[in-house]
Image (tube, rainbow, N blue to C red; front, side, top):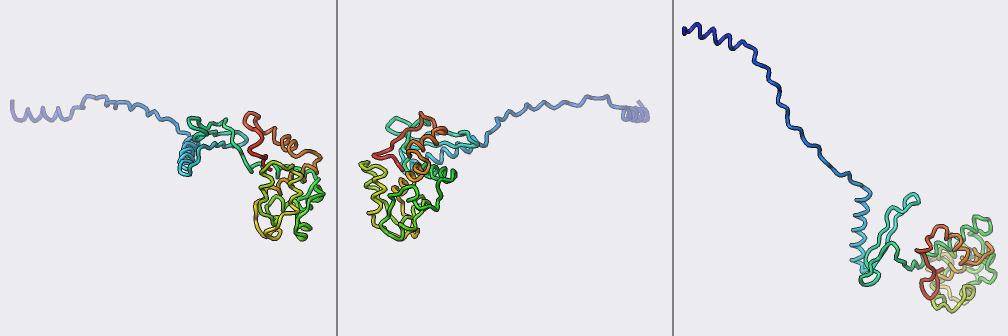
Length: 236
């Protein structure tokens, strides 16, 4: 074959349209299956871990927690043990101590809202026998002072803790207690002043202290998870 013929044949082949080739289809990537994470659940799990670590570090045998949001519990959990091999659960009963002072303060404020008592009233308005040893403090003390631990008296808890005296008898002992500060000069924790505040509110409302607190609190309490009496005397 001549050189010219070979050249012509090469030009013809070069100018031909190449056959169409379907583009290769890449292999389909399988979709990723991811589990949606709940941010709240993760935060609560971290909270549980922190509480348990702190409990162990501080030597607390057992504890319980409830978190309420918009009126509904969103997290209820027990930590540790109440006795060997008896774990704390959401149903474990705990003494709640002086958190009951919130109930007493609630009753006082109900009497205030009903217009039957003012925080600036003398306790004698509803407790005629109320008296302090210091004449100046006795003349100036108010119901508000009973609630804010500013009466000038330190703890007089021994008489209260024995359980031998009634609430009225405990309040009568305040007239014999030696003040350790001027009225409103110092914060000094005082249980019997809360007894006085509760009796004052109950008298203003025309009822008995324990019954009134129970009547107002009970609609929001689960009877199976609440019991009275945490020691020799119930807390004021």
